[in-house]
Structures are given as structure tokens and as C-alpha cells.
Amino acid sequence: MDIVYQYYFNFLGKLGLSDVLIIVLWHILLFGLACVALCVSASLLIVFERSLSKFLNKGNFSFSTTDLEQEIFKSPKYSCQNILPILFIIPILAIWGIIPYSNKYIPVESDVSLLLFFLLMLIPIMGILFGGYSTKNKTIISASVKTTIVVLSFALSILFSIVSVATLASSFNLNEIIAAQSLNKGALGWFVFPNIIAFLVLTSSILFFTDLLLGGLVDLRFSIFNLCSAKILKTIDFLKYGAIFIFAIFIVCLFFGGYLPPFGFYLSELYQINYVLNTSAVYVEQIFWLFFKSMLVGCSLILIRFFPPVLDYKKLVKYSCIILLPCSILNFIIICIIKGISGGV
Amino acid sequence: MDILSVIFFYIFSFLSIVGSIIALNSKSFLNAIMWASCVFVTVGGFYILLNATFNATLQIGVWGILIPIFLAISTSYLDKPEQNKTKFNIKFATPAISIAFLLIFILLGITSNYFERLFEVITGDLGLNLEYSSLAILSENLTLNYGFLIVLFLIVVFLLIVGLNLISVFKDREE
Image (tube, rainbow over all chains, first blue to last red; front, side, top):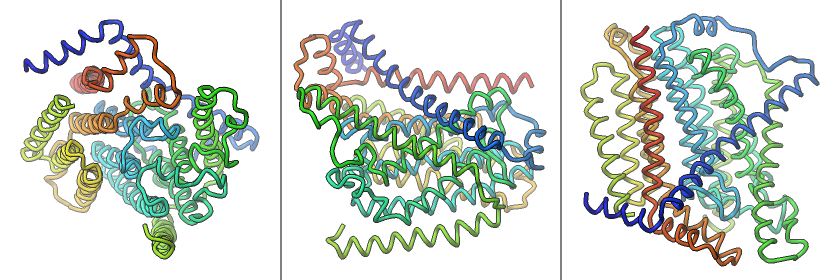
């Protein structure tokens, strides 16, 4: 223990109180930035959705209440169920750490960041299942089990489409995947064109995945949020849109070149003014492109959510198991063969 | 990093031992599953300490998340009256799992040398000379050791989760 004390004493002695304060403030700033980015993106998407609903005269995005939902609202609320959103909030905040904002600025760089993203997507499913069990109501438990089964079937198709992108880039690192979508070719180098089947499978399955997680399906409207008390439900409601925005960033990183510009060159490199200014402007531009593209994709995802196909439980399972999953597996095999012929992984 | 890895090792081992003891002794099958998933996630943390991130993700994904889910789904098809009688508490297991996940992410952040790369961008790419001595010392110390920050951050998160937990326990008692 003496070594530990000595270690911290040396650390504090070297730095001084003001420096320690700066470090703490810097970390609070980083944590706050993630929260602010989440809030801003979610609020922008909400504004877009409301303006769209006014334009289409459709009212807010909502279904009529089902029998199951009425039963959920009638069932006794245990205060322990208010902890469940932790299983949703922690992945959403942690995902901000994996995203490559520019080619050098990635908070948590890992060789398997793509798999980590998929892993974080799976955590809320645990919340749905165990939240259902905590109600001690048989109909709600069966609904939660059904939702987990459908969500897992969609997750499988997501996994295969992700892995096909990883084989194209021959890496699980998100930054390397973006770098593989070469800058010189511009928009033509993005992975949407060679891997369009995976893109379509991923977007459709992500739409159903989020809808199922957040309780938007027609006959199975079960989510973690429905189990919470009304106060917490109101405060957490905007997180749904944050989740959609994060999925949009994920799609942009995999298929639309992430932080790369669509022209094949950086706008800030057109005029050479000063080395420091130009290089710092490139970083800013990279962040701008990432958020601009993901906002476009997020808005289009919300636009598609306005016209959802009416699918019940059986139709959804058929859709995921007969259409999406075989398509993604076939696509993965074809890409593996092409990659093998063209020069190996 | 040596002392930090030791601290993380002890936290992970504490969580895994406590989780396994509760998982073995709990009467409710679902409770046992939740604590077992906590144990598997913390074991993933050990893999990260050994610089085996791919193994860690497989361990956490397959054993920590998917197999508990499948076990829990399989219990719904059993018609045992004992299963309905036993109490199922999510009060302590969910915070334990979330704490384990947080720790793993912090550990990943440390192993990827986040600060080193950040200061490389400032100093190396832009070609700036840091004139402020305090900033230079700060960067030097951050690259050498940043256990102090991690401990502070961990304490704040831990207090938050424990506080939420306590509030829920007291509310339950009132009910």
C-alpha cells in the first residue's frame, strides 16, 4: 500500500492543485460533450419529426394503445424497475467513445471496435427480458420473451452484414474501415456501392431493431421505458432519438465514408494559408462531414419511420428469418469469394 | 500502468468472486443468471488486462450476454410452480453488470493510450511548441500515469449507481 500512496503523492506533488483541477475539469468537459452531443442530436431529430408531422398532417408518431400496453400501465410499478434504463443509458453513452471523429481523434481505439459496437447493442435486450420477468405478470413476460426472440433474429442479420463490411476492409477497426473507403475516389470509394445488399439489410433491420427496443411494434409494444414510472419515462423519452442518431453514425461509418468528404479532397486544403491553420481546419472539417452525413441519414431514418409496414409478430419473424438473414449470409459468402479471388483477406 | 492494472485486477476479481458466490447460493434461477452474466463480463476484463481484446469481446458477447438471454428464454417454457414463487430481484445485479461494463470501457480507454494520441495531435501534427510549463507537465504526467483521474471518475460513477440503488431500496420499503 505504501507504493500506492507514494505513487499518488508523487503525482500530486508534481502537478499541483491547479493542474489537478484542470484535469478534472477537462474530463468533466469530455463527459459533458458526449451528453451535449446526445441531447443536441436527439432534439434536432425531434424538431425534424415534429415539422414533418405538421407538413404531412399526421400528428405525432404514435400507434393506438393495445391491450398489452394497457396491461403494462395497469400492472404495479416496482421502484427497482427504475434502475433498468441504466442498461440502456450506459451503452448509448459508451458508444460515443468508439466513434472515430477524425483520423486521429478516437477516444477508445480498439482493434475490435466494430464488435464492441455490436456488443453494446445487445445489452438493452437483457433489460427487456429481465424487466419483463420483474413484473411477475404472465402476459407481460411472454411479450418480453417474444420481443427478445424477434430482436435477436434481427441482430443476427445485423451481425452478418457487419462482418461482410469487415471482410471488405479486412479489419474490425472502425477507423481502418473508414480509411479503406479511399479518399482519392471520393463518394465512389464508399462501401455502399460494392456492398449494397448489406446496406439495405442493415438499415431495414436497424429500423425494426430500434422500433422493437423502444416499443413501436404494432402488437408487441413492450420496452424498458414502459416499465418505469411516469416521471422517469418523460425524462428519458428523448434518448430514443439519441439511439437513432447513433445508429445513423454507425451506418455512415460503415457505408458512407465516415469523416471522409464526398469530393475526394478536403475543402480546407484548397488554399494553403498556414500549415497549423490548414491541418487544424482538416480536423474540424472531418468532424463536420461525420455529423452532417449522420444527420442526413438520421432524418431519412425518421422519414421511413413515418410509413411503417404493419407487421405482427409472425410476419416479423418470417421477414427476418426468410428474407433478411439468408440475404445477409449469401452476401457475406459472395463478398468472401470475391475478396479471396481478388487478392485475399 | 502497472499499479493501475493491479487495481483493476482486484476490482474485477472482487466482482467475479462476489457474483459467483451469489449466483451459486441464490434460490431464484433468474437471479443466478444475472449474477452469472456479471461474472462472465468481469472475466472479459481479465482478458483485456492480458491484451486479448478479441477474446474479451467474444467472452462478454457470447457468455456474458447471449447465453444468459437464451437461458432466461428457456425458463419461460418451463411450467414449474417453484419458479413463480421465488423472488427475482434486479436491484443489485443490474448495477453490478453496468459497473463491470463501465470498468471495461475505462480499461480499454487506458490501453488505447488516449491521452498520448491526443497530445500527439497537438504537439506533433500541428508543430506547436508548448510554452506553458504547467501544460507541458500536465501532458507529461498524463502520458506517464493517469490513475488519479480514473479513480476519481470511478468513484463518481460508483456513488451514482449506489445512490440510485439505495433510493430504490428505500422506496420499496416504503411501499
